[in-house]
Amino acid sequence: MRQGVMWWVAVVLAGAIGCDGGDAFEDCAIDALTGAWRLSYTETDGTCGPIQDETFILGGTGDGACTEHANTISDDRCEQTLDFTCPTTDGAGTQRWVMVLEQVGEEHIAGTGTVQLDHPEGTCRSTYDLDLQAL
Image (cartoon, rainbow, N blue to C red; front, top):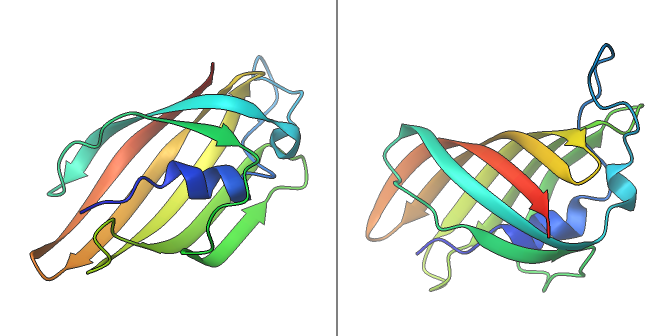
């Protein structure tokens, strides 16, 4: 039922993620990241269950199926908050994601995402740790 969200995140990830000083990664420019990336999901709470890892190309154009509600990038280009809704792969339901991302390295993004899945076969809500690595 769930449609992979990475293709959509790749389209809007023209911005984000978090530099907080100290020993943290400070050369943030997520809006300039491109190429092939791998997204891993680790469920930390909820009832939706595991999501398979996804590979995507950052900087794609998407197919217009998702609706963006918010896409906020911090002034230092290190943090990004996304809020969007996409149809499920079968088109019978929707999935709404809210993600907070942080650039933690030149080729590494980490964050959390919460999904609300509404479908005739059932509804669920889960939170996931998100880990994105350049390939």
